[in-house]
Length: 424
Image 1: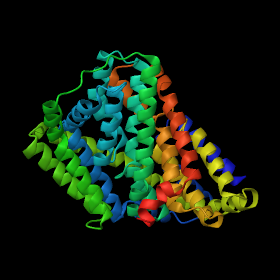
Image 2 (image 1 turned 90 degrees about the horizontal axis):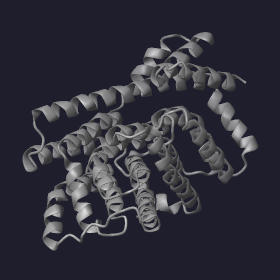
Image 3 (image 1 turned 90 degrees about the vertical axis):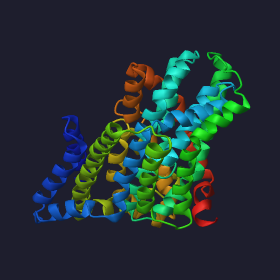
């Protein structure tokens, strides 16, 4: 009963339009006060939420992604991908997904991926006769690959909240991320063949491919340095973020010479705003999590799950259904910070690997980024494409179905996520 009242109170605060960070923090503070706990717990929780070396990776990865965004790296990646696959059926759509996957592997940011590639790809696809809703939905969904393909900021936050290895999470996301990108590509080719609303590009010459590939090569090398460096243990995720930011500056300022002082200042300001938003949500969620832990709500929920949910499959199904509904009202990071502290204690009793569960959870909150009415990527693509929200929302539904199908594949074959971190 207490858990239900707390949930109603949280929904009530959100309905008023109060930002999620303040809704979580205020509700947590109120719960602590009603139970007679010392108010000293609140500043301790706020300080503990951000006093974490691993979280330094968040602003550093954001700086890296924004520097690359302002430096025009997305244009180079798209041009290189287009030179190789542009003449395929739906070739521009395929090039868009490939570009999104590569930029996601560099930046770790879903929003930056959608904004960067969308700025280049949407005008190209419109000029080539692609269905507008398909193009907008494709870009919104392609941007979500930034959550699953490492490095990923939500993966870092999940690892901090669940106290799991960030490196293992990064490695576990590689295969599912590639599979999801491949499914997006397969759908894009099929939709182009069946719909017929696209104009094929002429096959690029060998010289054009070489020129475009050489232009994008430094960005690919940057992504490989970050991922391989983490994999072989050369540096931690936080150190990898620092290395990535330094290399992004070197690439855009010295090699490509596409970033000036005004662009760097804009990148820093954008990173600062996003970092403050993320850290405020984390701090508010920490106070809320402290309160519900002292109320023993996670323990009660774990007992209820142990009593009524007998199999891992049923547990995963229930979690997916809950996240599916929550995705209509909450953004991705909020769902992660609210749900993981409650669900994580139940995993071991059901024999569910927490790393595998993290990947499944991330795919579900990835889907929330393109679910109306609060899907963040929908607003990004609406702004970039100067489109109606209705067109963007209608275009993403096939990709939502593909994401849900990926969950089923991942459940049937958990080694897809666990092989690289634990077997390779």
